[in-house]
Image 1 (cartoon, each protein chain N blue to C red):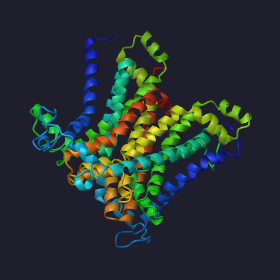
Image 2: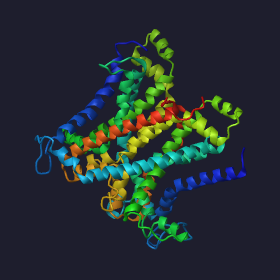
Image 3: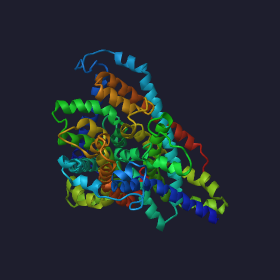
Image 4: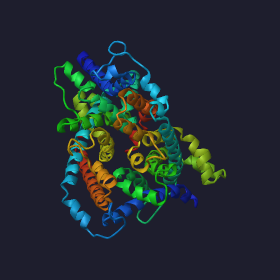
Length: 283
Length: 292
């Protein structure tokens, strides 16, 4: 039975939640075009009506810090570099391990394949706050503190569990007959993996890649505690802007610019996530 | 299963990397926890159980645990109820669903700390839109970030904004992969929407519910980024979570040895808590009303 009241309530609920979801983005967007008079006299929302919009907030991102600009381009580039490198390394190591766990049987004492997979995934339990001190000392002793290599190593291990989780599940859906046929045709296991199995794993690789990008782009704790001057990553930079009393318009513009790639990723991620693939991982 | 002597080539690189970068630090943390490493005294000098003895009676530590788990419980509860409800609303929406699905998963994709910077301006006492909007309804302004209960609520509101999307997409994926037969059976039996939910949907969704809740509990137990940006654990120490406290003790005050012992305690409590929770939930779901 479908009552009109029920349908009305349903769309009202969806509408309300949509407003809640977009509100912070809209607020940041409108704030990014403000100047003094739009901010200091209480909250204003509509440009031209409540305040006179300017491009100052956005222009500051492109100006030299010496001329009153915001130091954001360097950290942006640094974040792109670390994210790309860590995602790449984690994907290579993670898919290899996931393929191994999906196709061969391993035994280490009482540990079997499922235990090893669980061991990988269980590393997500470790709070960064617990790891930060040993990481700090470890990187300091190897002179990798505050270097790109050090950050990529830390980020890669943070991403490995995610890649293994997504890819083991995915490889399990690719029929093993495919591998067997390739092996009979004379491929060695590595060739089988790279030439035959991997090209059939597009969707799994896309999900793993997108999740890696989201996690490493958004990582804050390690970025804050393990890098300071040599490597400056985006999230701590924006947070420092916040405590340095940077005006709201530049702050909002840099926040929006920082999350924009992730909003685009959300669009792609939805296609893959809502197809039930994720749900199967729990069964 | 395939057979090959090459099999270790696949597993070992990742396993060795993980062992080196997770297990070594963990063992090192255990060693540190028995040492008096601090600003004045650098190095691993054995102090026995002194750090643990101090940790166990540290009221600040237990308070931070209480704060953390109150926050986590409230956040995950709201996120589960809202996320599941939204998933149910969009479950049978084919066309308009796409638009809302994309919109609803945006929060879980964007950087928590950077959004926290934006939220700080939203909850600003005089210039932020939150108090302004409340003013339209005649509600007096609230000092969101500088009074205890509102600061606590702010953290929860932001967490719910961010992570309801995660529960939503998991539950939606779960709903979409449900088999048709139980629903047809329920329809033939003349079950209404509420009874279908209680007797068919809820039990069938039990495994994915458990998975989603455990993941959220794990991730939210690390709660720290937002707190750091938003309240710095304040006012007083009312929003200080364990991770935040560890950060202050360890990397600000440099009480390395003591912080290591707090970390180990925190980890043990977290693991025991999660195991107990997962066991209890599994048992509860097994006796839950079922369609069969």
